[in-house]
Length: 275
Length: 174
Image (cartoon, rainbow over the protein chains, first blue to last red):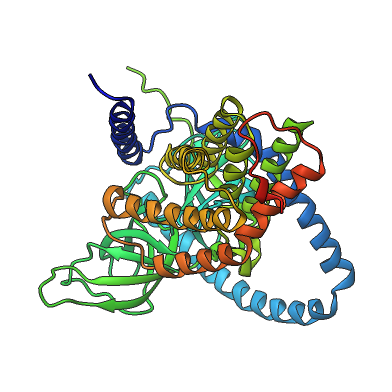
């Protein structure tokens, strides 16, 4: 009744349709159906070996052979350190005053988070997505959804955790979204990734005061990133006449091209509520 | 010996794409190096070996990348099917044509990525850096894609790897 060719063509069309449906489902659900850890567990040990070898060779070069610029860099760092010692003292005083005032108002002390250092052993093979592989996984207490940071700012979020390795989606990835606010004016919005050196700060109402140079920090309201963590600096603001929101470009504080070590924040265990 | 060769090549390509090239500024725009390899195994291995190999490679790339799960699996599967169709049914297999296949495959992969962003992404619009990414990858594949594929074929021949699948195209080795 039907020729072989017709059956083949119909079969291909059905296969393509099923393919597209499955792809659209997986892109929306961000699920890997349990298979997401297979590749991490298989390939990441080799990535770690190669990355550590390269860093070892580079460290030998920089520490023993390439000392010409080190003395100069040392002088600059000492000057910066002196400036920050003074600022640190001021912040310490502010912190002490904050604690006294909180005690007066009977604020409960927030439990402190545990921080774990991890090394970056691999990056996304595609230029379209921005993820990294780190050398800590479930056996170290990591799980999906944990924030990854640096002292300079937010790095991203754990999206897959295998036994000893994890995949982290960077803040500059197009699928990333961070609830944020402007430190100075407390204007709230969402930071979305765009490219290696820029993020978009969306849904910031035009009635709020935002200026170029303002620091953007995490609001803590998305339940992922602790409040106050730095994200970036407002680089450009534009307003379209018919829009109620700004179009804001934010330059991240973290240099994502040079990530080598990161910190994963592991929240404390929630204490059981006794009845 | 043969399987060791293939697994070794795969690992090598995966490691340099994820652990070496991202740290070299000029290499960051490199295309997916597994594309020529998938074309290579489509040509040279029997379907019962090459298809699972291509699917496993796709699975591993999906795991290592931040792409939607199944994207690389899908692409490598259809690349495999397309190359087998071209070689077997259209009987076109000379060096020049294989070179064109590599270049077209890289472009198709990028178009697929853009389609994912445009129709299935959280923000349904093209990424602002689409044009630079595609341009860099196109230039790289133009310069190195055919050489890489033909080098794989020549290396396999030098290692006297016996094929028992779709016979290698006589002109592929020159």
